[in-house]
Image (cartoon, one colour):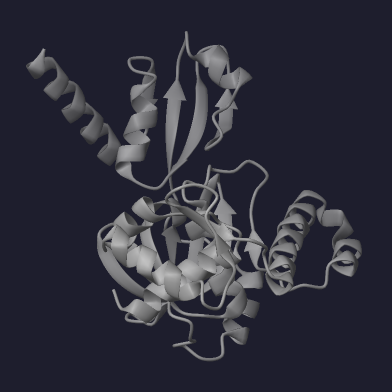
Length: 283
């Protein structure tokens, strides 16, 4: 990785209030720890960077303009929760918040595994900068448009600059992110307006109907899993709709209820039978 890109990444994380661990960051950027220490020494010429303990570095004080950035991000999050929780008060909510609507999400959320990466995504959306990501082992060049949470999962909605189309990416599957500090796409105002009128997620989330029988019927009805909704319930079974992203994810859910579950999908049923046959062979 080029030196200037490393310096940008390190400074950006420090400005966001993060405490950098040199060992961890060196591994993430695929360089030596000595290289990271040299980069920090160079940044210390212009910024007051302190070390609270060996191997850790942070800014002595977050600059005022970054405090404002973080405040605006939090306001957008609050705006989003209010907007989606109290739809009848749309005009009143819009009157309270004048910032651009950067983030949309439900009230029950998937845990964010890499908070530094998530904050950099928020910044790239706000600053209108293109990014490079490593996604499921593949490098992609994107222009981010919005962050959204749909049916529990966090997504990045972005323009794939190679394929020149809008795509969605599971944020927790992004292995690395590099902000390019320039807009490689151009004016996105019309696209962002259109995203307000249409669903953010179209092709990524899949669904399957499942019948669950006693003794799991009562627990499922009493505490429905967060990525499911009940379609029908009676004394014999409960019919639920499972929202999932990958077949592996669906199987992990289904296996918890074997043998008291019926999968109403031919493809997933075939996969389940193969899993059970392999289990019997091994045992």
